[in-house]
Image: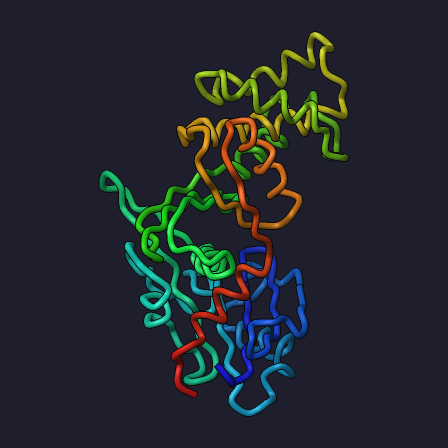
Length: 296
């Protein structure tokens, strides 16, 4: 693609963008605390112009926006693309808010036992990671508030599952009885405590039981105060892995920010799973690939 590309990841609480060259290289990046929940109804075009308008000045510039900007609370609501779906399927379902110039990427949906599951933004990272790694099949996980486990075959997302791992950590951390035995802030990452949380979660029948250990270890003074947030993190991530029934020797691609990705890499290693980590460039590469084939 020879036209300038502005790649945008517009989430619930944050907004980031990149200006890409013709080889998908990042020329410049920007990040703002301007997630969709901070934008008044009808104000998305103005916010976009304020923060990225200068990038749109060169003639023919294209902007592709992934994430929650396409949700009901976003710029416009863009229908989900049903799985199985490949990159071309998603690109063909772009929703144009400024014809030929600005488009929003649809999310994906799948259904299991009559219950739907959805994602917005993660699909772009998945397709970008596949291109960066030169693969067209595998299991990919995108950790976060709502972690996504994605299965890809022949370059198409065929199935995925959402686990509310990060949200459950926050609920237990701030709004449960466990909050009374935890420090005010998480502090630094404590590797032994995290590993202990992972191990306990994997040998427990479920989080409803294992989570109480965070309280009893504190009551019997068997765990220093500073270690407790990392232990709780290990419990909830360990519960996520326990439900995936992973086997030693499997390969998993982990996509996300370094700090969280490294926790998953460490946790998966305890199961003998081979892990490849991909960072923030996955989103930009996914949007770059979608831009191919769009006529100027």
